[in-house]
Length: 438
Image 1 (spheres, rainbow, N blue to C red):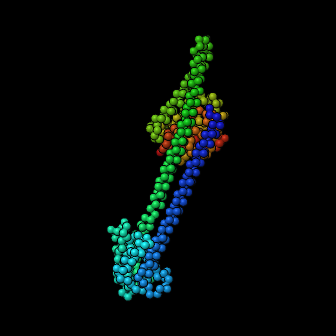
Image 2 (cartoon, rainbow, N blue to C red):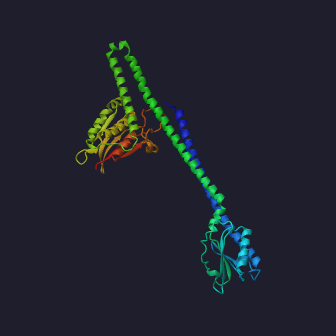
């Protein structure tokens, strides 16, 4: 029997593990958010830096070629950025093409503008670009591909003045290329966090399965240890020579062995049945059955337990369309009802069980309602899982493996039905099984 201290300790460990997983998830989310924030900041910085380097290059170009007849004019009044990839600057005197190309390449090299550029010299008098030139950066990955060899646009705000237009077709790729370290580090970080998340999930899942297995072994040991010990004592008594002269005692101990053997056989059959039906779809053979007769037979199978617990059983029957016949697998449905009756008897100190049948819309239902300990709402979503048992102060105060309700769920699912559970702690629980009539 597991002590309350051990149970509390196990619960604390489980709670601690949940908090660790939650904290790690929150920390990962914060790291991802901060990384994306800085990635955005770096991108904005690289864009501003590119703009600044182009402006510096244009300023150097003015100094090299003396294109401005009014030296006192502010640089901001001469330069315009009509679009994200375009820069335009006024030129009172348009320099020769070779000179402009030479000096602008030199300025780009000085200020680190290392991407392709297409330039054009626009004449307001001719209302057209009098020459254009595509400048490939020496280290540009796009030097051989020139998708930017298209006509340069004439922006409305520059039509009336001579100007030089610079177009950077690969600006975005260049800026992102400057961020290679940040992008690679972000991808590595994301992959690391995904790996960490997968590891935590796997670890938590393995821990959960380990706890389920541990509880199962504890239940299995307790479930078999007591009957075997009783049978050992009874067999020792039956092996005494004097037992022949005590027929009443002989009969009593023989009955004990018989009952304990039936109990063990039933549990073994449940384990084998659960092991051989891993699929949620049980093979069923539907036939026309009388559910009220089925309930009567199910009650007969738990009659010894009813007598032992001095239980009060109340059966409320209702006809369906004038008769009470449904299409179902008799053996499996009876087993489902037996499981519910056993639970109702085991989890009630002074059992009062109401078994009710009836029709709800297009379904026939069988309801088993008890006055037992009830189930807290937080556990209801797990009660149909294999090997799951609702935690109490001592998990062995009621025998079982946590297989009964799981098998009930499989049976009802195989019939395309559903189960509704209503429970109040300290008041009782109702399981209502729905079998389609059509």
